[in-house]
Image (cartoon, rainbow over all chains, first blue to last red; front, top):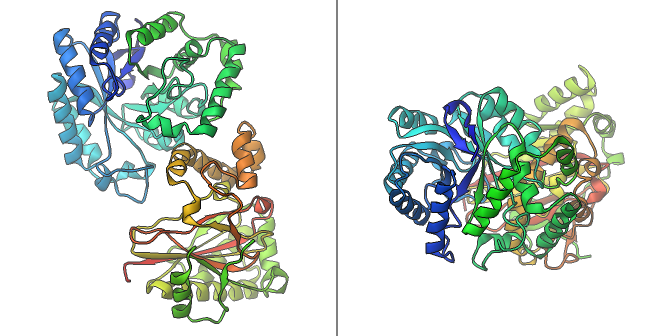
Length: 307
Length: 255
């Protein structure tokens, strides 16, 4: 497993980070989930991405890390969700309402306890509005948590397709990482966010390399209760499927998708949701093929449509 | 196509508020003279020929705000009389809209076309009662409104989860560069087609809409925690001639 530098944190993280939400979903197989995490650790994956408020995922991951004796050798990329439920990040809400420092601290402490790790690699704000940069006590709280040794760094996670929202905060020098959707369909981050991140030594966590499934090929479908079932309503599912099918002229979509996400040098790690050992094996096989050559990347640029 | 309830330009705010409260769709209109008959037509036409802009008045009075725009876009001291007349009308509209809820109204003007307005949406504010008055001068088509139960809310939420950031980005690019929507979204033909036709996947009956009369003043309800808002969208016919758009919003926690 190759590693990359996580921006100015100085940490090196595995090229893929296992997204944990689907491992602990209600319809998941707990035994398979545990075996998948153990297999990932065994194969050199040392980075995991988790919602600090996902208690089931934290409990699952914590149990396996302890059983595998891995609590000291993993990097946890955590996200703290807004205190108030939001459909979309809104500048009409003050940062103090959305991310009060006490909320960030409580979420961090609870996650550390559940996972049994001494320090999170990164704690992030799960949604981000540029207006929040100068508001509230979230920044002071993050800095205090870093001083206390509870986190190595901190950053923001941008709402899907909202790459421009990250430009100011990346350039501010205040954050260590930025998380963003980046895949064959949404290549928007490469335009300005990635160059800015490189300029300011901000690590990039790319997420959703398979656009929540359609680029992953068969076998990663959702249950009716999964939020993505509603997200991919008929018209959107049909268009997405048709566009994914067009990729066949270049190569198999799943391998292309993962390799594409890793091909940009600004990216530190790609967070990908995995449920089974078979899915992990397929992703690891794609990773072994390395980054895409420039000609293939140029051909894939024509397939962007969610940016 | 059905028509909105109308109110005379001389109607009292209390009367209009009652009409709005009685309106099932939450929108009413008031006919206004066409651009050719307005005393500030030359000023507006000159502004419409310049690069599109948007200005929030904030605490500026209309005459000061229009002076700022005119001086910057057209040069100092231009159209002094015409802009004074327009400022008077904007001030009257702001005063009138404020009286609907018993609060000071906020005003903005814009001459650029925001493509995000082509997608059905409701405006939202946190106060108890809120209304928005629109007077788009020199537009070929009126705003469309539709009933709340003509929108599949869950689908709209899923649609906007993906499209809202993309639409905001599109609006910004149109404002900053003036590039046509068709060029900026050439890689998204299905989404472009929906904006052209108004047929979005979350609309139950795409023909069940009402058009505001072109050039009319309209007032619609803004969604608040206590009251539903009016679903509305702009018309594709306006993209080349967005007009001079006066937007007045008033909100308060009074009943």
